[in-house]
Length: 82
Image (cartoon, rainbow, N blue to C red; front, side, top):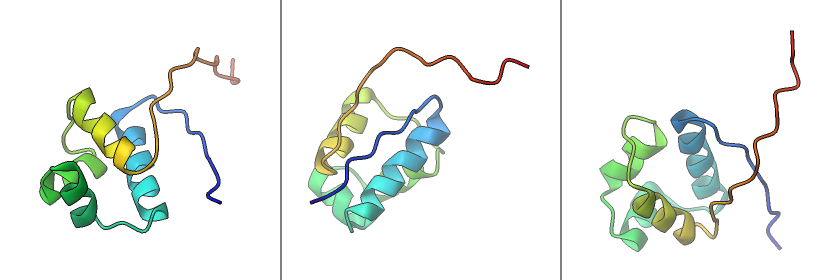
């Protein structure tokens, strides 16, 4: 059974990293993910490197294909108050 991990995402760069990590954990290539979602491989690459932002619809399709979902929670205040 696959371990479910949770990540806090507060930037485009973090979203890109999370998507790339999830794809790799699922053993998929960018080309395979692109084919499953009807997205160009170059677009998947651009998303994963943070070069381009995409609509929420596209991001949700990518997450669905990777067996993941978007969850919204209250923001936890930063621990460092210095």
